[in-house]
Image (cartoon, rainbow, N blue to C red; front, side, top):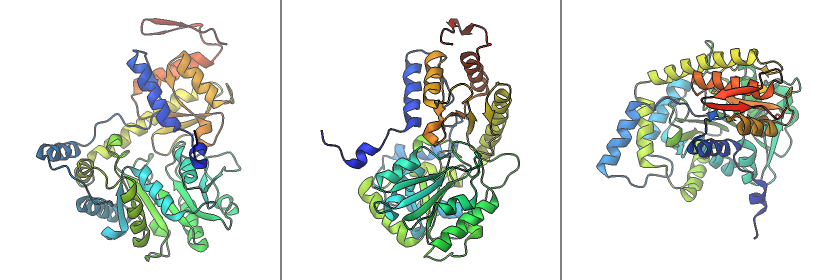
Length: 405
């Protein structure tokens, strides 16, 4: 069988694969604890569910414009004005099948083969693969001090004549780190000075902790004209717990949005009309659910940190936002894939190997499940990894005997 060079270069999504693994084990009746997911357990806003049900009941579920229905574009315009203090027009907005598609069509619109795209380490698992799907070259930049906070000069040192874009995700998946105002200001200035596209993946920007405020990239932009190369990505999946609705968007200059729309029109056409109407209702409806989710995640973060702090040999950075804790487990095994496989095989705890995010020896642990899952999941992990733990563990009525040390 003949497979393209690009096709051969792309690996499967580690996070989606783990979701599948967890679902299969649960279907078999296994007592799985999923600490690998990026999916809130809260319900979507009732306004969104009523809007979707109403359109379904009408039977008028039809094709939509490739760049989104007018009502959704107007909702995104209002959202951009409220949270970014930036007035844009419908031609500056494209709605897509999730923030992931918005990023993908943006990359397809701006990249040529062999172009380079820079992003800090750790990074979301899909960034390198999305860049490679365009025939371009991913350039991950790991902070020299081993932290999750890159320095501007480290990014700038990796800019070459082939560099086309920089991707910034803050708060970050997988670390939960929120980049400083100084760093964001510097990145905006650097990209403007060098003529680079700056893709701001802001999907978690309202889910931040400890009294922090979202950092608005537009505050530091000198070029606010239609030649600006800022691309701001967002969506309903995380803040509204609407992961399965697959509605995201991008805001950028009109010419780029036009090209992205052309690509998306041939790629998938417009997003589902039902799901777009649900997204409109979520964005324009009562917003108390976002704050409720944020508070839940902050509390879960605190519980996770307390558990990890008592785990000998584990180093964990306290997340500033998002759904995750990215912890260094190299004390137990420097091969994060083997470590994750051991945990799911022996104690049925699903985690994501750090190597998938560019940092070996780490595991990404989700904080968007229940407190019970966090407490029990870490307890099982301790039992599996700590040689000083008792030799037996009960999971419900099932007795486990550790025979792998």
